[in-house]
Length: 315
Image (cartoon, rainbow, N blue to C red; front, side, top):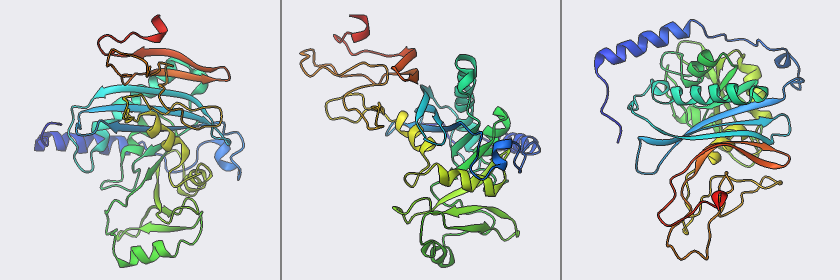
């Protein structure tokens, strides 16, 4: 389990760092493609996610994916198992998770600079935050990428609440693309509630992270939604998922040409052998790989094979 809540001095230091970085946030469009109604010129959209091992809030898989735009095909994936030492403190999520996501962006820049995303969608909030500087802002400033915060639940700050008025506003979202502003008691619009698809009545909460205006952020998020959660974030979460198959097979989001998951397989091509008599199972392989027309090209792999189980790539 993560360590206990940090002391007052640490929290004050984190607040000071947030305030310093907050001064660098750009709340307007900075890219030419953002000015086009169809986002002409946008070719790569990224998504990040940190998925924790069930029952352990210190072991997680940090995932970064890059999708083509507008067809939303996976071009690149990076999954790394990490040990999270900083505790969760409301309003300071970035100090717990952002370092691993920044490292993923740096690995991409070093290994495949041509696949650097032109915008990142973050599973979390941006300016919809206690101090106007959520994880999407934090990551945007540190990577200098346009970033958008997309949250599944309303962060109740500046007078925003899940009250009857909010529930009524949600009921008024009749179809995919409908929105209502999230205006705090300060009079400032902190984000937008967006019904992202017709299939789900639950909204998502979009906020500015960095180098985008709110209107562009909402339009882009909507264009990336096939389901409730936008594809870059959904694919990052799938990519970082740990094995759950009752045979122990590694089900970490391997996709076929049609985008469907392939059971009993892992991203590096290591497969579960149902004929094995060793009693071992496919371990949770993790590494970085690149998707191409010819399939997945493994760039690196770190795996702990179960006793008596050999790696198919080494046989």
